[in-house]
Image (cartoon, rainbow, N blue to C red; front, side, top):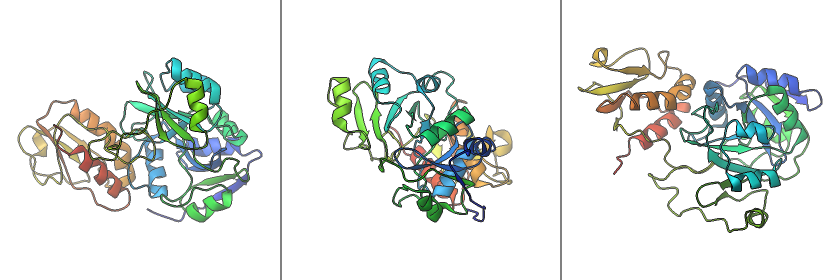
Length: 328
């Protein structure tokens, strides 16, 4: 990625409006939650989400947690049933993330949900996070504010050490109180503990009145669904077969293009270009939406032009390779 951003650090007092303006402009803002410092981006802006992946060096397009200010805001992006509503009312604000079906018209970008029909949502308990969410007025995706694979940050200094020059703003709210990520529960037909975290399993089971199921042992296999943030697995899979590194378009194929030059046969085909300028951030922002649209056009196959395997291109190619896995 291109480094060289001037990363500002502001004390938390009075920083919410500045942070909201930065997010509205597609910027990246690190801020404290009660669990760890999160790296925030506008959840509805796919290009901002792509910048976030790039800044973290995240190895794959995993689902991200959408942070909102209260339960009513959560209901605008996710559908609740009786069990998930009981959990939300018992533990929000707090270190619990719920994976729920998307609400009709859910504004969270496909890139943030990794193309899934579910969305991970949380109401954080930290007052600084609340001020920023209130000022911004939209969901904010906020994975831990560190380089992927590094220890999660619990102070603004940790964030600066990892992400200086990669993000726009750090809001310094002092050390966090919990220090580990939120617990993630999948609200499926059987409630599932997807990630242990800052809320004990026993407390959740007490409210549910039943045991949480364990993650299936095969959840990391090539064909498994990505159930939650931080769990590498296959993502949205088109029904239409996908052919990678295409140099010529075959009869009946649609084309997912990249860059200014088309391949032979494209002049007669259905074509969507991830980025005519060859911009990997733009390509990442368009990836899931364009795959869905081409999938809906009823072509024999989707041919995909080569994408450079550098920067965000590595994650784009990882996603495309998973999409191309034959389905039985």
